[in-house]
Length: 305
Image 1 (cartoon, rainbow, N blue to C red):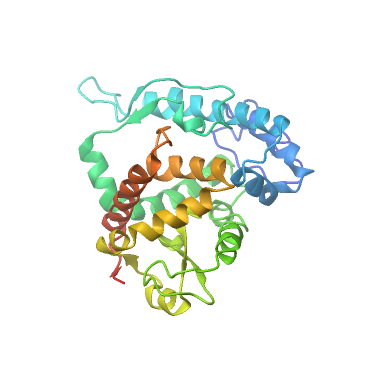
Image 2 (cartoon, rainbow, N blue to C red):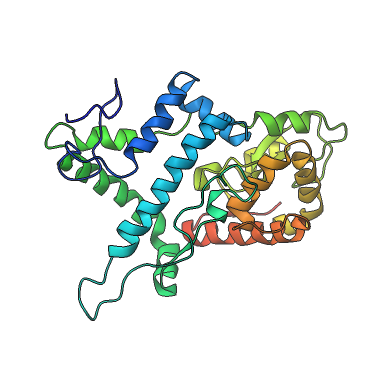
């Protein structure tokens, strides 16, 4: 169907005309990165290398091209043209800052810390906080239907949904955090402070809620406590009561993994290249805000230690 977008793979067009004559803007840059990693272990290997800040210079160059192309396409496409079709209608998005930022992906702040900002109205943001989870599910289905339509009958929506829901096999890998905690002689349960002979790595914000496997989100807990906590989100007071121990474990995780820890913390909690010299109070404040935001969005049952 059209050009050989990726040898041996089913092409999922992202624009009308099935990309027969004109590829989507960032397709070529992304394919160069994919083909480069095909012979290095594929996506799972890329995921691990990226998480551990262990991408080579060639990969970083290809990744830089792809991410900047994607970032620029978002701004000149949907950000610019969403809304505003009528004279009295306001645009849905506004944008301020840089559309591209070359050769900065490997920096501690990450690419997103060097790019501009996309804005929506506060009213829209509040509504999305309440209904975003359910809207996300419907977007996946509608996007699958649209891709199948653009493929002119060569794909079924079910095939597209299956691809859209794929997650990395390494997505729940907690091996690095487990190794760090295994080397601590007097390990304590983060929620009960009790000494641990054996432990489980607990996702502070549940993986099922946020799909976040960053080091800061992985803490040691007694298996009995982890079983009780299960699918509940910690209450507002629970992290506050364990703040000293959480910060202690964060420092241990950061020791020897500073680059990865800082990048993950900046992306998820601190945001936009905050100064990491006095990161502890800012990071903990960001953590409590993230917990309450997830609670507001998802309405899950809360758990207190």
